[in-house]
Image 1 (cartoon, chains in turn orange, cyan):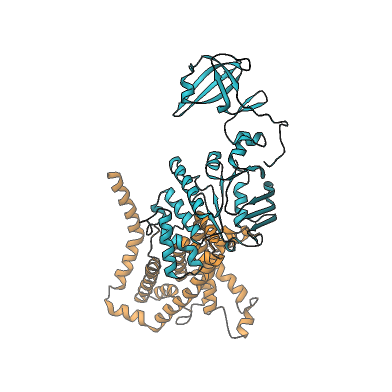
Image 2 (image 1 turned 120 degrees about the horizontal axis):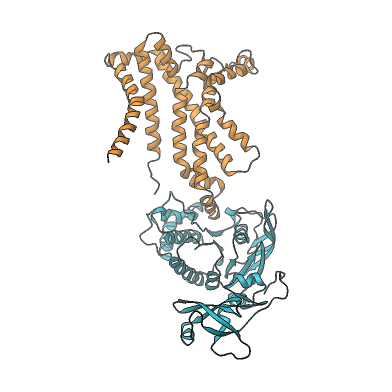
Length: 263
Length: 326
């Protein structure tokens, strides 16, 4: 009894010190001057732009990485494709490489003097210092999450249910939609939550390719840092709060999407 | 619908799973594929279902050349050893799966599901999830699911292998009754010769990727094609170069000219049957199986001297007989 209580106290205490206290302080500081300054900080044109840009990037990167992650997991677990080891290594690459280096490589490839950069600029779609580059950087850094969450679940469910569906007349696509996808849904949900968290929270890679133009290529995460450096504490706290709200909303939505429990 | 398997070969790397298999399963029959693990029996069943692709050879289901067809176009019912229940669906949804895939009208699906739930005696379980069922109930659900689409052919891969002995016996009898009512061509895989003999009209014995013998259960038991089948169909004594089944060992109190002296070593009373372990001529151990009445008439105590004689014995000319068909 005492051992269990101690264990709980330690676990909760750890969480409290590392998570709840900092988050609580953010909320506290945000609202320390009342609601007015917070509202002003959130509705400032640059802040609105940062929020829109952050959501835009996440809305492109998260679905793309979810689709890619499921596909990569299927290839890794369900096929005997040659080059699987290489694919597995590539999926993990973004974990191994520093985000700043990723941003830097994107500049080398798509920048003014990069391999393809001039071509894109000539055709009116500059990649670097603009949204496409930030989306690319975000996709890159948040690539592994869905695949890494889904792979072990796919392994664990095995192939028998899929084979049973096939003998009952289901095409491979029907089998995927009706059997495989429901079976891996918690892995996918978890992967999407992690991908979203990373997509809205990425700093290094996005900072390098964005040019950090306030009101143009400034995401919420960049805004937190820039506002803080410019002694605009209200702006920094407000942006941080928005990020926390987006993360919580994602968690909530994903749980809402799949309310059924495994029987 | 009849099944015809012609010249099927299948390898997994260096391992030969099926070697030039030819098998004819008549329409409406109940056939057991019997063999030890690794004999290729499951692989053969999976090749028929399209779950495994043969390296060469052909499969016909009725008049249809099934070889190039993927599993989902073969109209074959398949039951797996570990049930393969769709865990995220209720029992009713599991059973309805094949019908929903075929886009049958909703009322028809509901009616058919009700019918099948009754057939497999799962009334009241329609809204449960597979994890809330026992093994036997899960397997009955899997069977109903396979039967829902009225397949021409029903294939079962060690269907009762994961169940406990009592449930297994129940389900065997039930499968036999079901087959007698529905007459769907059925092939099931088992490593249990008793199960094969109890349920099937035809037993196909497999060993090392080949069919060693096929015939009705009694025929295979009484006239095994070779030593492997002899051993596999039940316990057997090797006395000299003759094989004698335990129930063909006669125990006498007095010698009669054809008997050999023996000593009782152990007596096991197993209900209706009594198993006696003997040592013949001070050397070879021999097992005998007697009815209780027979045993009661004999002085069967460890150390007691008796005389034994084979009522029926069998010799095989070559040590490794060629695979033959009965």
